Every structure is written in C-alpha cells, then in structure tokens.
Image 1 (cartoon, rainbow, N blue to C red):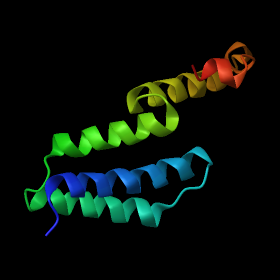
Image 2 (cartoon, one colour):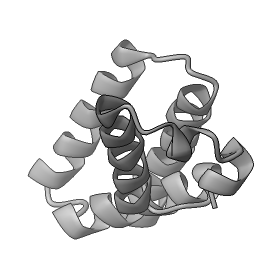
Image 3 (spheres, helix red, strand yellow):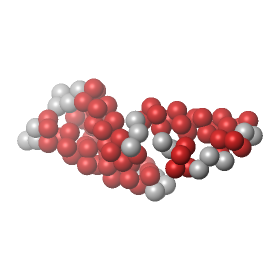
Image 4 (cartoon, rainbow, N blue to C red):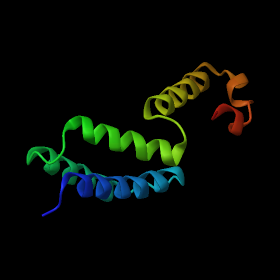
Length: 100
C-alpha cells in the first residue's frame, strides 16, 4: 500500500511531466485528466487533502515555470487584455522581460 508521501511524490512527478509539456505547448489532456482522477481518488480515500493536492501542484508548477500558478494566470490575462485593446506596448517588451 502506498503511503501519503509516496503518493504525493507520484503526483509531483506526473505534474512535472504535464507542466513540462505545457511549457513546450504540447497539451496532453488524456494525461491531465488521468492525473486529476488519480489525485481525486487520493482525496476520496483520505490519503491526501485538497490542501496537499494544491501544494504539490503549486510546487511542480513553480519548479517548471519559475512562477506561481496565480502569477502565470495574471500575466497571461494582462497579455490577453493588451492584445484586445490593441496595446502593442506590452507585446513590444521582450518575452524574457515580460516573463520575470
């Protein structure tokens, strides 16, 4: 039987793969949905809490993208809004500076 720490490590490793693919613009919905079900099963049987699941997602996301999930969503929303406004000033900033 898998213990809590081994389960969380398994989740972390799977999240790393998913986030690394996302970083390369390679979506893998099948793998993502499988992991969501795996993590949900861990919550249902009481192996992990929702907080544990969120923490492991945050850690893997930060390790791959070097930013929190919230910061990434905010940055992408800002870019989307700038594009909708036709504001070229945001997109004229080199990506390596925008992504800081």
